[in-house]
Amino acid sequence: MYVFLPSTIPALARLLEEGRLEGAPLTAFTADPGPGEDVEEVEYEAMYAAAEESLTLLASDSDAPRRRVVLAANVPDHVVEYEGGAEEGVARVRVAGAIPLKRLLSAHVDDVAAAGDVAEAAQDPTSGAVEEHALMWFAVQELRHLVQEGGG
Image (cartoon, rainbow, N blue to C red):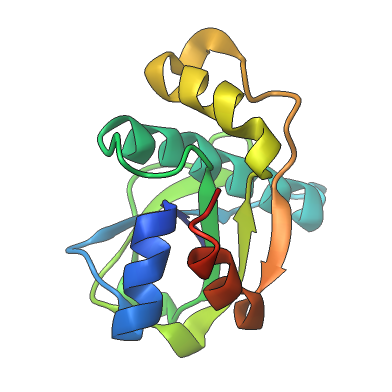
């Protein structure tokens, strides 16, 4: 199953160092489109649901660079548990166990220029401060460079 996991730059650094993403269980979002819904559009919405959750992680880690991070991974269906019904085709799920780095497909991260707006949104998620900022796509091979730069 294709899932989107909210994260931060420090959590991404730990993932790269340890070779796995751990938590018991991990919160994620997945596309669960209904009949006639566009799968790509619903996946986009799932990614941004994870980006909103990333703001919560940033609010609890004042040392983390102010950039939303979303990790896209392909995990076995049997490790995913739905937390309830899908809203607008997006389902909040829990992933049991660790996710090895090899399951990671990409990361989606705010540009450094968004840091001020991300900081505002982390303090007040209803502010709408990040609505104009699109997440940038990073291949797995690029993530070490992103982390080495300090994330911003």
